[in-house]
Length: 326
Image 1 (cartoon, rainbow, N blue to C red):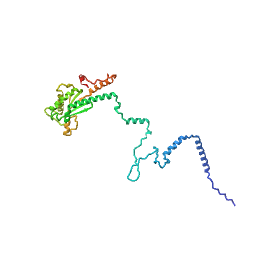
Image 2: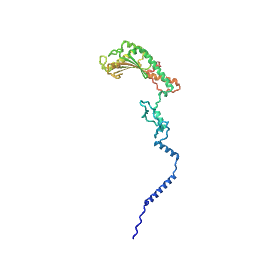
Image 3: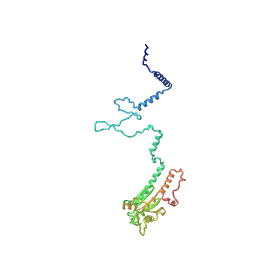
Image 4: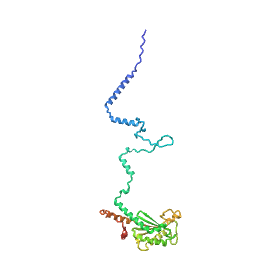
């Protein structure tokens, strides 16, 4: 009788031996790598701390302390103060304002922003000489303006004349009311006497005098005036003749211009606006005398300064008007 084969006993599969050998070799390899490497303990603690903040690792907070939140950007968060409400509960308010991270800006960026945001005041850039010269010139302008106003005070109150200062120019605006009849260039007796008084003041004031005539846009055609150009020029010439009547004012200082309806003050859309546009303006230009006065003041304040190269603003026609300068 043949013997039966022995049954095989259950055991570990054959591949496990190979797998165990492979794992052992890998473990030895990583152990060798770790033994060759160097660990910076301080850097390791810093990285571990940043990771704990980034992942929101909580910390123990005493009960009496206000709860504080953490985020990757801000280490602490302070809630807004509570506001009283009708119900018996406390609410907090939030804001949508974006915080400015000043720590992330370089010193160059901060300097550029400060220079662009803060505009320097021009007054601080002026030297004491400039301030003194401007103050003296402004004082002379106000004095001249008061001289003209003293003569025209009654006419200004009646609304027949307006006095305006435009930088270095003084404008005497003569309205049509009380100065000229409608459609005429003949001065009224009352206004002609006012111009004679003004001529005595203009003799004492230096500068060029320009007389401009203005009309509205309503066409005119008569035996004397072919158009508004003739009317505006005739009215300006009538004012100039009245100023020169006494013979004290030099004709070389005057210039007469007729502008018709080309430079209206207001749109010609109503009768009131057209009345405002019908006017004669006496412009006292003080730019030249002011430049000369400024040069002389600077020479007095800075006698050692070289002003020989400065251009002479006076023309040959005005060389005989030195007595008119301030």
